[in-house]
Amino acid sequence: MRYSSQVKPISYLKANAAEVLLQLTQQREPLVITQNGEAKAVLQDVASYEEAQEMLALLKILALGTQDIAAGRVKPVGDVVARLKAKRAA
Image 1 (cartoon, rainbow, N blue to C red):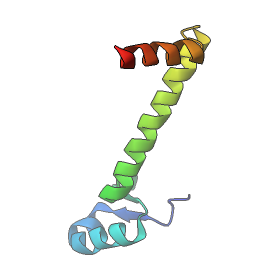
Image 2: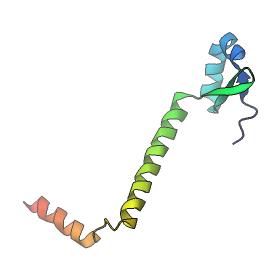
Image 3: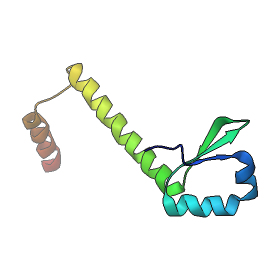
C-alpha cells in the first residue's frame, strides 16, 4: 500500500480534525501527518490499529515457536496428549 496520497500537513489536521477522523474511519487507510515538510506521525482508525496489534501478537507467537523449535524445546505430540489425558483423568 502506498501512503503518498494520504499525506497532509499538521495545519490541515488542525483545521479539519472531524473530517479527518470520519475519513479515517470510512476509508480505513492511515494518514501521514507532516510538520515542516517532514513526516512526523501516522493516524489510523481504532479498528485498523487493533487488527495490526493482533497481527503483531500472532507474529510474535510464531517467532517464539520457531525459536523453540530451533533450540530443540519440543516434545512429541503423543507425549503431550498422553499427559493431558492423564491430567484429565485425575
